[in-house]
Length: 363
Length: 257
Image (cartoon, rainbow over all chains, first blue to last red; front, side, top):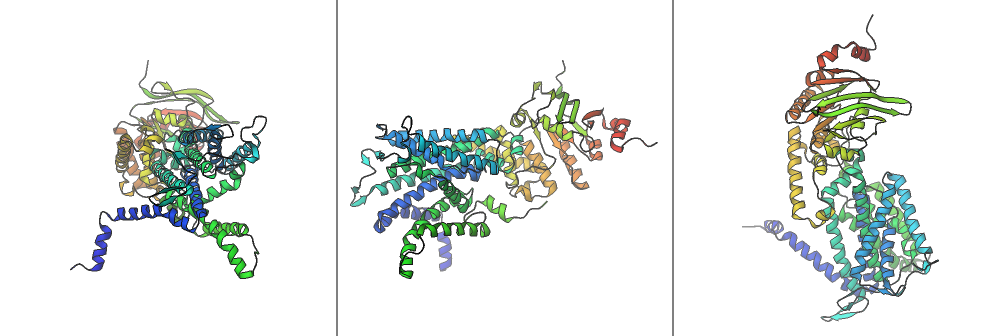
C-alpha cells in the first residue's frame, strides 16, 4: 500500500510537475496587475517601472556580469532609447511613427552609442573603464540638457511632452478598455507588454550565457591575454557586449518614454546608473534570475518604505521626523554594506560566482 | 625553394628600452619535430614566444609560418593561422571548469554568433554539441577526463599544465608552443608529460618547447637551440649542443681552469 509520502514523491517526480509549477507562476503573473490595481493603480505603475529596471539590469548584466566590463554610465543608453522614441512620436517634431518602427531604431541607435563608448575604451579595465563610462553617461545627459540651441532638438531641461502611447491595431495603451467585464487600464496593458518583453530579454540573456559568445565573454573577464591566445577577437567580442547591453537599454528607454508620456534629462542622472548597477550586483552578477530579483527588490522596497515610513512615524511621534527619502537611502546603503559582508556574490548568485567566492584556492 | 620548414624565423630583434631581449635570432622548425629552446633565465626564450604569438611586435626581422608572414598580426590571428601556446605562469580561465576552458579553445574553429545563439538555430545547436564532444575527447586525450567539471583553479598543478595543453590543442594548431610545461612537476608527472608530448607529435602536431629540465629536453627533442642574452649561441642535435663549449660557458659561467 502506497503511503502518503510515497504518493507525494510520485507526484513531485511526475513528468508534469515542473509544468504545473510554471503554469502556477504564469497564472499569478497574469492575475497580478488586477490584484495590484485593486490596491491602487500606482502599484501597477510601480510594477511596470520595476520591469523596466529589470530590463536595464539584464542589459547591464551582459556588460558587467558576463564580460566583466564595469560600466557606470549605462543609463545613457536608456536615455538614448527614450529620446529616440520621444522625438519620433510626439508633437515636438510633429512625427508620429508607430512604436514597432521606433523601438528597433532606438535599439539600433543605442547599439551605435554602445560601440561609440566601447571603441575608445577597449584597452581599459576596472577603475579606468569605470571613470570613462561615468563620463560618457554624464556627457549624454549634458547634451540632452543643452541641445535646445541653436537648433532645438531635445527641448533642453523642459524635456519632451505629449509623447504618443503605444497603439496596436486600434488599441490605445493610454486609455481604459473593457474586455470580458474587466477594466484594462493603460498601466495594465503596458504591464502585459513589458512582461512579454521581459520574458524575451530573459531568454536572450540565458541563451547568450550558454553560447560560444557567452564563454568568450567570461574568458575575457578571466584573462584577456589567454583569451586572445585562444583565438578570441577580444576587440569585436567586447564591442558586441557593449552593443548588446546597450540595445536592452534602448528598448527599455523607448517603452519608458511611452508609459510616462513625458521625459526630461532629469530621469537619466548618474544615480540611476548606480541604481541599475546595484540591482545587478545585489541580485547576483552574471545570474539572469538573480539580476531580475535584484531589480524587482530594489524597485519595490523603496516604494513600500514610502508608503509605510510616513504613517509609521506619524503614528509613533505624531509628526514626520525623517523624510522617507532619507530613510530610503539610509536603508539602501545599509543593505549594500550588509550584502557585501554576508553575501558578497549576491542574493542569487550564478553557480560560477558562488564558487568564486566560496571555494578556496589550491596550488 | 625550401618550403619544408613549418616556421622560419629570420633575424628577429626585440628591445625593451635599452635592454636587448632578442638580437638577430634566426631558426627554423620542421614539420613533425619537437624543437627545444633552452637557455639561462632571462635569455629571451619567452620573449621569442611572445613575438611569435603576436603579443610583442618585433623591432626587426621577420618570421614566416607555412610560407606566410605573421609579423604584426594580432594574437587571435596567429591562433587562427595555427599556432597555439601555453604560458610559463599558467593562464587558465580560473573560474571556468576544465571542460569550459577547452570549449573556449574551440572558439577559433567555430562560428556561431549572437544571432545564432539567441535564435538557437539548428546549426548553432549542432555546433555546440560538436564543441562539447571534441572538448571531452581532448580532456581524455591529456588524461584529465575525470576533472572535467572542476574549476580549473582547483586542479592540481600538473593537471593545470595538462589542461592548458588540451585548451591549446582545441584550437587545432599545427605548431604547439609550450612554455616550460614541466616546471614544478615531479619526476612521475614529467615522465607522463613526456609521453603526452610524444603522442601529440606522433599525431602530427609540431612542438616548440621551452624547458629548463635538461633531461627532458635532451631525451625528447629532435633539435634544440640555445639562447643566451638574446642571442642564439648554438643549435643542433641535443647531444652535440650539450657538449658545445659556448653552451657550457653560458650555463656554468665559464670553463674551469
